[in-house]
Image 1 (cartoon, rainbow, N blue to C red):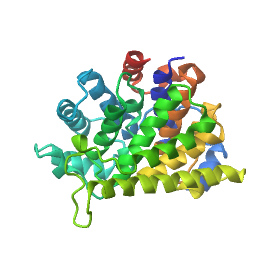
Image 2: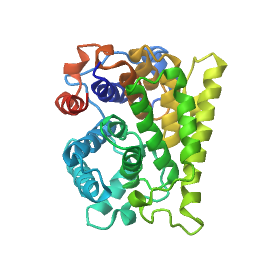
Image 3: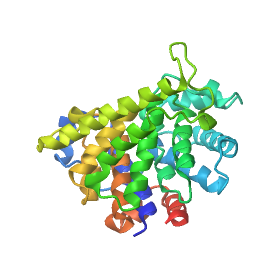
Length: 330
């Protein structure tokens, strides 16, 4: 089945299809591609955005540290790989300003808690977290800690942390055989169970803000906002009519919980048709590449690499790096 490869390639495929539609109005997208959005990769190679580039940075950091998945081991590796991405000449795909600001501060060696953008919950927190859900052998505490930590290096808002954990666990559960129809309930249960769990061994004193009274109250805000976003997905699916701009139903995706919600919505409309999933994610008026890349990661985790068109594997940018990670984790 090669589910890890399916998810990683699905992320890149969605990212590439959403690259030209980001910042476009829905009517303009439909006029060019139809309501199903783009359904063919374009270019040799088909270029991706910073979403895939940063997901590769996270995945390759995890591959580098191997079994030593601790904050002390992972932080310098993630820092180094984020800095390398920021300095790369290939970092020319309209990268997010939050990531660039935070990484610029990381570059001078300061503690990451002083570099992170404390009030940002932009989708850059969870667009890159898919590998955390796919790497095998982690305990639940490690996986949740890494998912939040990789977000926290740049995006310090509790909702960015919670949305990243949910995104990683959606990929994990789908890879392990969870039925798509059961995914929303599982994510809601995770919100409830983790609502007051602050992972201090990974996050340190990140919670300390002028108006926050405890670490539990800090993280609960993130889980509550994510739970509300999942409610919107459930309501949108229940309407039955899924035509039109998905961003009108579940949010534009510029912030973490909306990127998760709209990606889930696009995925759960047609979970057994991955090309339709990523096309629909790309046919959105908001952060189209991030929405489509997360939707593609979900579809690929569930259906595996063979569900995607074979010819896309040799067309997509960074195929060699995607194969390396997928091969290590399949």
